[in-house]
Image 1 (cartoon, rainbow, N blue to C red):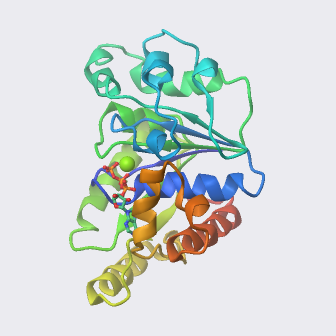
Image 2 (cartoon, protein in one colour):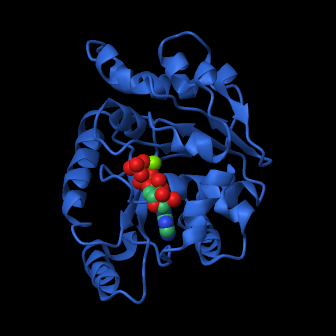
Length: 253
Ligand SMILES: Nc1ncnc2c1ncn2[C@@H]1O[C@H](COP(=O)(O)OP(=O)(O)OP(=O)(O)O)[C@@H](O)[C@H]1O
Ligand SMILES: [Mg+2]
C-alpha cells in the first residue's frame, strides 16, 4: 500500500509522522520504504540517509534506476529514498512533460522489492511533487496541527485530492486525519479537535499526537523519536497511531 502524507501548510508534522509511523511499522516486521519527495529532505536527514547522489531527483532525471536509489536505514525493514534540494527544480523542468504527474507512479512500479507500505513525504505545496505523489498513492494521510487556522487550508487540500481523484487517480482514498502537536492545557487545541471531529468524524484518528519536545529533538540525532526515546509521550502516541493505522487497513474512504 502506498500512502502520501500531505498538507500544504508548513510545519504541521508531516515529516515527523512519516518518520515515526514508518519506524513503528518496521519495528513490528512490516517492510517499509520512505520516499522523500520534499526538497527540504527532512525525512532523509531524520535517518541520516540524505544523499543527493542517490536522490529521487536522480531517478526523475534518468541518471539512476529507482532500485539503485534505495538506501537501507539503520532500522531493520526500513528503506529510504532520499530527496535533495534540486528536486525543487523538477517542478519546472518537467512542466512541459505531458506524463509528468505519472512519472513517480511509473518509477514505483519498477521497484524490484516489494514493500508492505511505501510512505511518501511531501513538501508544503500543492505543486507537481505533491500531485505526482497523490497520483502514485492508494491513500492520503493528513496531519493537522492543533492551532488556529488549521482547518482553513484543509478545504483547499480536500479539493486538490478530489481533483486528483477525478483526473489522475480514481482509486485514491483518504486514510485519515491525524491531529498533531495537541496541547491538552491549551483550550484552543481542544477546540480545534472538537471542530475537526465534528466535521471529519471518524476520518480523524482516535489518538492525537501531543506536543512533545523529544519528537522535535530526535531528528538532530539522526534517529526517529521511537528509537531515540521509546518512552516519551510522542513515541507512545505514534505507536498507538501505528496500531490504529493497521486497524484502518484498506478501509480508507
Ligand atoms: N508533536 C510534536 N511536538 C513537538 N514538536 C513537533 C511535533 N511534531 C513535529 N514537531 C516539530 O515541529 C516542526 C515541524 O514538524 P515537521 O517537520 O514534522 O512538519 P512538516 O509538516 O513536515 O513541515 P514541512 O511542511 O516544512 O515539511 C519540526 O521541528 C518538528 O520536529
Ligand atoms: Mg516535512
